[in-house]
Image 1 (cartoon, helix red, strand yellow):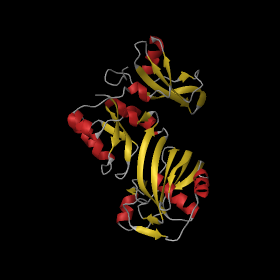
Image 2 (tube, rainbow, N blue to C red):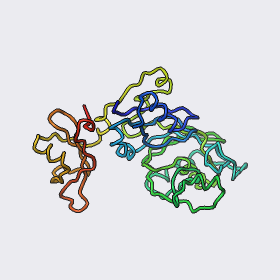
Image 3 (cartoon, rainbow, N blue to C red):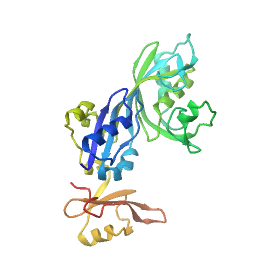
Image 4 (cartoon, rainbow, N blue to C red):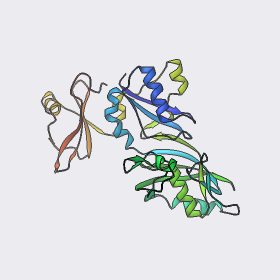
Length: 293
């Protein structure tokens, strides 16, 4: 039961809908997801079960790849095609070379304004609740990074691009910002997440797989395959099980340890008070919590 499951989420389902379906199928409440997908969006949704929840934060930190289609000439209050039009422009023209240049200009880090219709909390309340109550609120900004962005298709009314982005990036906001750059209002027509970290659509189950009771599970250790994994002897294993701070001999900001049996027993990262040492962030030191190979 403990593990990672990747789903190809359908349009119209919320991320919570998928979690609820997995909870019922596996008869457990110990289920969570890494990275919300809006109901309009489809694609890779990583679900963690049981001990998998302990490493969900590491999965959520990883980059994400999307394919988005943009409707030109309008901007909506939700920044996607489901919302109400708040900006409109009929007479516009942009040639493909200038469109490519505009997309390229977003590569790198930039400060992005969070969408009003989002689950981000401000003053203890989620932004979408302020929107529903028609209350004005200053929207927070986040430093995000666009690692890659590529134009796939273009016509006068819409264009499609592929992008790889950091955690916390809103594609709806990126599209709004691209529109501002072009001086043409733009809104998201469709969105598909094709990858999160090392998990892709090739790994994905479908909603139908849940319904027929046949799911493929990804072993937990694969979720840590981007970390250096160190095998330790019983002496160090005992120190780790007690949460000991260790000497940093590994030249990595974060490492995982496994015992002689091949079980992952802990995740460590650099100790902020002494860079020559590493401290435990997750310790799996009992029968129920060891990550099994």
